[in-house]
Image 1 (cartoon, each protein chain N blue to C red):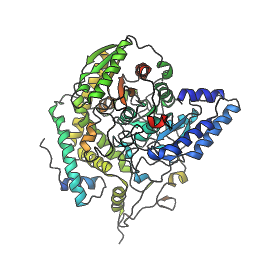
Image 2: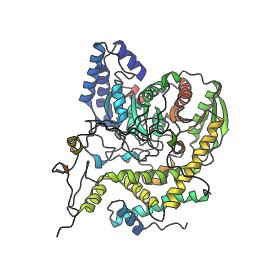
Image 3: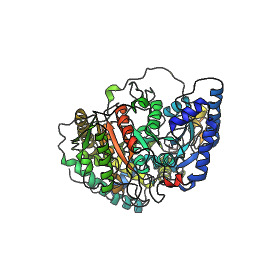
Image 4: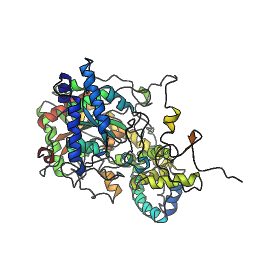
Amino acid sequence: MIVGDIVSSVRRGERTAEAVCGEMLGGIEARDGGLHAFLHVARDAALEQARSVDEKRKSGRDLGALAGVPIAIKDAICTRGIPTTAGSKILSGWVPPYDAGVVERLKAADAILIGKTNMDEFAMGSSNENSAYGPARNPWDTTRTPGGSSGGSAAAVAARLAPCALGSDTGGSIRQPAALTGTVGIKPTYGRVSRYGLIAFASSLDQVGPFATDVRGAARVLSVIAGHDARDATSLDAPVPDLVAACDRDVKGLRIGVPEEYFAEGLDAEVGASVRAAIGDLEKRGCIVKPVKLPHTRYAVATYYVLATAEASSNLARFDGVRYGLRVDPRRDLRAMYGATRDAGFGSEVKRRILLGTFVLSSGYYDAYYLRAQKVRTLVRRDFDAALREVDVLCSPVSPTPAFRLGERVDDPLAMYLSDVYTLPASLAGVPAMSVPCAPTKSGLPVGLQIVARPLDEATMLAVAAACEHTHPPVAPPSVTKT
Amino acid sequence: MAAPRVDRALVQHVARLSSLSTSDAEADKLAGELAKIVEYVAQLEELDVSSVPPTAHVQIERMPLRSDEEKPCLSHEEALAGAPRVENDGFAVTSFVEEK
């Protein structure tokens, strides 16, 4: 069931929120064992919330924009009374005393929080294999990764264990898993959605966004979570247009830029062909397709891994075993406690990134690495500014390959970083970007089309995504349709 | 600049700065991995960025300051609820002042 259908059936009283929620919980119980999309299922809280939505309807009050819609929440997002680990041992068993801004908005819109989803530890990874609790698996082929870092959210939506979910995207962590699982995933404009209560990874890049089985469902969730929040200093004070209505806009005459740098060496031939076919289809619908240049694309990975690790090294300093989470105390002195706690609590990728980030910020290296990367970031932004003056949106692949096998890239951190090559530039530029399914590979693995728009123009991006979806309607994996 | 030598000593220096304890074996493994990443990142030196301003944040011009008003916040009990050790209504830690 898609988001819009759930809302209308609950509003009309054809189904109760409790029945919808019960069905989802049953699905999770039956099928999540093989996927590990969830780290925590909030069964009782979800049913209670669903019943209160049903009460609200019975008493004649208006229901919100997500009435009775079960939603899965990435475990990096704080949920009051529901454990939140960010996929890390250092937060094992921690229960936040407050809700993230996005969670408050979802609850106010009568959505039902069904659980917390698996993720790479502190959102650092592209395959979910850095989760301290074991990886989530791809419902299209459980020997493969659902992508990362929001892999659990993507796997849950792909397997129809939830019609929608929240993720967070720092360098592609919503778009890449969406592409690898055949779901829709949106990274909104930087500042569009509040990060209050999102466990920070790289603050100049982090952005919360939705996953859904369909474009309109994702648009509906985004409309609910978008908007100004004074508790996040980077939150933009900008009006949010009707994003669901934007999905019905005619795309005729829209100018689509195709960055040639995104079709270079390293792109899987089948992925390239599928993405080009999707762009060709948009052309048939009246879009004007033209090549554009994003000349600094090849520097994006290096730039990102300097800036994101620098910010992470600072953000993760707060995990010291004093105020929350794990403490390992050798009872010598405070510094020994910090070291022992962080050594036991953090996984190897997190340590690697903290070390790299501390290194690029350290005395003698700051100018050569960190400051230089900030300047290259300006060049990447200028590329997007220039291209998006010529065209309305950019279309490209999301990931150079379809879902890869679990274990395939774990021993080579750099190879894993390079798989983010097409998603990092839009993150550095702060522009909105999303993944929408296009034609799968011959072996049936999903492929995503990336659509990038101007800052705050999610509406145009969604119109193009909806047009693409018209040709490629949502498809559930065989493992779901068989049962 | 000349590429830095990423070895056990550098890793352990950076680990101290990051409050991470690393064993010698772990530091050696990390040195190898970080050396590869640092070498990759060195490609940024190909670009002339002498006249390019740095980007610390995008869209700062659209970010309003919040009004300076008192707002409700976590209660004392809520703030302490997740602490590994609490004493005298505060976060308790191992002593960090040398006692004589």
